[in-house]
Length: 177
Image 1 (cartoon, helix red, strand yellow):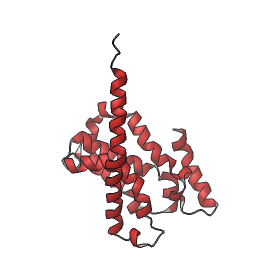
Image 2 (spheres, one colour; image 1 turned 90 degrees about the vertical axis):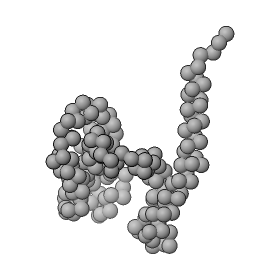
Image 3 (cartoon, one colour; image 1 turned 120 degrees about the vertical axis):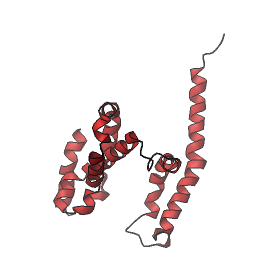
Image 4 (cartoon, rainbow, N blue to C red; image 1 turned 180 degrees about the vertical axis):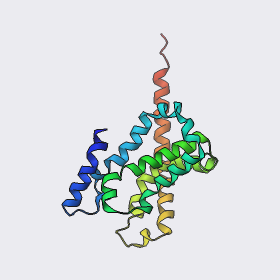
């Protein structure tokens, strides 16, 4: 909660120091990351109180609020509430999952969820808006990021997860004397 409280002041300090690309500095976006952590920590409480999230009006309202930075681009709003948008997006996704909407609860979206960490890792070199190279040009950049994420997932992440699960299972089996 401290990170959520302090980050807007850090964004303001970056802006005042002439560092206007405030979404490029980790201390200025830490609240965006911590919002997901907070939602994970309070997931069970949210699930117990999820009835209000299932109402269509709330669901649509969360979706519109999650897109708020598209509608409101004022610097002061971004400085003060930049971390709120990821929170609303995560809450919207949580509500969609709890509602069991078919748009997010299908095999394709499930696989994208599994692949999301690899996509997160590989998006940076290809979706760089400041670099004008052939590999950062749309739509090739999206295809390349997706291909690298697939390769990374199947060649690195999945084998390491299998190795970890195997070690975990062996430790759980008691030794016989």
